[in-house]
Amino acid sequence: MDIPSYLEEQIRSGKVALLLGAGASLGAVDGSGKRAPNMNELRDLLADRFLGGKLKGRGLSQVAELAISESSTVIVQEAIT
Image (cartoon, helix red, strand yellow):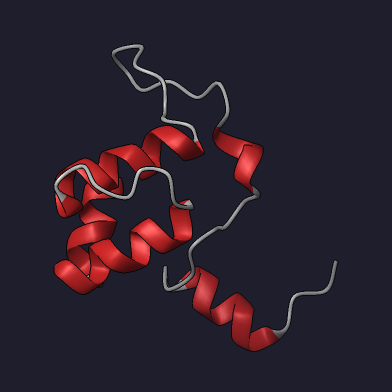
């Protein structure tokens, strides 16, 4: 695959993040054996942390947007990490 020179430069300088499809993390575990949350679990974690447990019946993207509006993009990204 040919990678455009600008993109290659960004990759080499560490300014690019790899994005994978939604299923890429299924079955993933951390160093202590804890598995990554699925979409609904992540939605519920965000709803609990930022929205007082409300709106768990909504979609992940909507809950994430509301969580961001209650805090900030960086804080929600740190929570997800």
